[in-house]
Image (cartoon, rainbow, N blue to C red; front, side):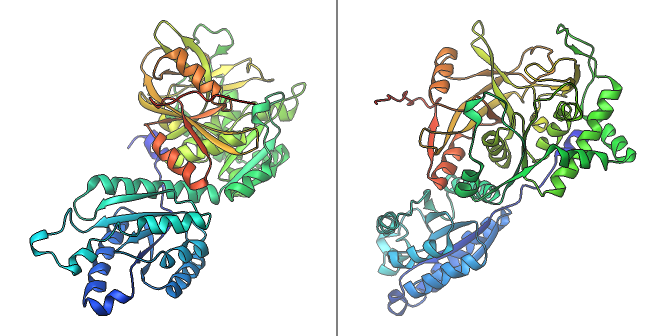
Length: 497
C-alpha cells in the first residue's frame, strides 16, 4: 500500500440503526407458527445488514400499540440514529406511529416479500399473510402524514432474491450514516466570512437548531497556541508525509507561482501539525476559517499557511472550508461521508471550445480524490487575499463527479443544489490552485445558467461519482428543498412576486 493510500485509508463506520418488525397480535392464535415464520424473515433481514457492517439494534416484532410505545422509548434510550420498519405482514398503523414519535429519528419502511409470488395453486391464508408486506403501507404513511411525520422513503421488493432492493436499502444505510454524522458534528468557526461575500453569511444558531450539530466558535489565538506546542520531531514526521504525498514541480507559466521553498514548506508542516492539535483539542468534525490579514502580522502569516494542512485533514475526513463558509464545510462533510471526497470548489473559467468548465479553488482541497499526485507551488501572491504561502494543485479523479451546494433561501431555509457531470483528462493551468475539467449536461451554457439561477452559494463540494440520488434522500430526511439542475426533466423556476 502506498503512503498516499495509507494516510487516507479509514473505516467510515455505521449509523446506529434501529430495526423493528410489525404485525397484528390477533393473527397469532388464528395461524399457529405465523409469528415465528415472520420473525425468521426479519432475522435474515437484520443479519444481512450486519454482514454489510451495519450497527443494528433490533426490537423484534411489534404487534400492539402498547408495545409500539415501549419500543419507541427503547430506541430513544439506545440513542438510535435511524429507523427501519421491516414490514412483516399487515400491521395496524397504531403499531408503527408510536415508535417513530418516541424514537425521534428518521425512518424508512422495507416491505420485502419472502418470494416473488405466492404459489397460487397451493395458496393458503397463512401464505397470503406471510406475503402481505405491502397491504398496510398506505395506512401507515397516511397516519404518519396526519401526525406531521414525513417518511423519507421506502423500499418494496423481495427478501431473498432482489439485489436491486438490497442495493437501495444499503444506500439508505449510507444516508443514515451521513445523517448521524451531521447530527453529531462539531464545526469550528474561526475568524469571519470573507468580506462582501453575502451568499456565505449564515446564522450559526440555525445550524445547531436545524441539523442538531454544534458550531464551536474559536479564535486564531487558539491555533497559535497549538502551533507553538508543535515539536521539531512532529514537524519532521509531517514533512515526511508531505514529501510522500506531493510533487514539487518546476515553475510553470504563472509568474506568481514558483517553486515551494523549503522554509515555507517547513512552516506549512508546522501549521499542519498545529491544525491537528486544534481539531483534537476542540473535538472538531470540521472547520470553517478566514482571516483577512494586516501588514504581514502573525495572524496573516498563520492564515496564509493553512492550505497544506487543511487539504491533508480534509482528505482524512475532517473537512476544512476557507473563507469561513460554514454551509460549504457541511456540504463537504456530507459528500465525504458518502465516500465521494468533497473538495472545496467554485466555478472557474469556461472553455467554450471544448464545452467544459474549470472547477476548483485556491484551497483547501480533498487530496484523497486527486487524479495523480498533487503538487505544491510557492505562491508569492494569494490572489484576493493577503500574504503568501504554499498552494496545492491537482484535479479531481477522472470520471463521474457531483457538485453539492448547501444554500439558504429568502426565508432562511436550507436548500441543496446538485449537478452531475464528468471530470475529463487534460491540462490545467499551473497556478497552484485546483482545477478540474468538468463537463455537465445538457451543454456548457445551459448548465452555467441553470446552476446559477438555482441560487447556490458560489462555493460547493466537488465529489467523485454520481451521488445526486443520495443527496436527494438526505434532503427528504431533513425535509428541505432539493434541486438537481442536470436532471433531464429540470425546468428553471418561474418567480412571481
